[in-house]
Image (cartoon, rainbow, N blue to C red; front, side, top):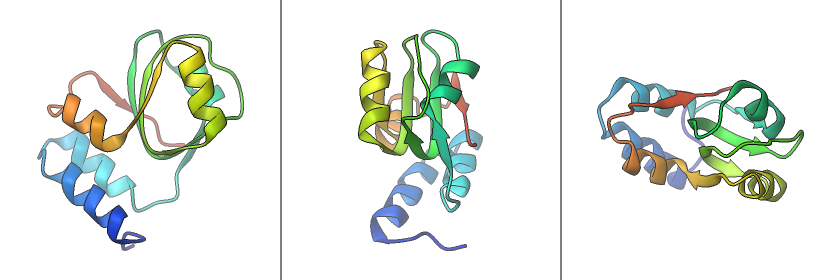
Length: 110
């Protein structure tokens, strides 16, 4: 499946340039329509985890601990809940730049 638009294509190309297995995996998953709820992030992560969501984070559910979430998109309620818990909601581009080697980054995709 081809990426949806030129902005999406640029993101995929930029992430692939890090040439590590995790970022290549995330770039491949970006061609799918992945959505993850904040509640799932709250259930399967621990405090201060760093996670990548190759799609959109939605606001259903609750989160009670801080974590860094990198995603292609965030709903406004998801961003608010992550930040209210003391975490950070960042773009995948920012996450890839901060963690170019991919160490310590978990992929959560559905």
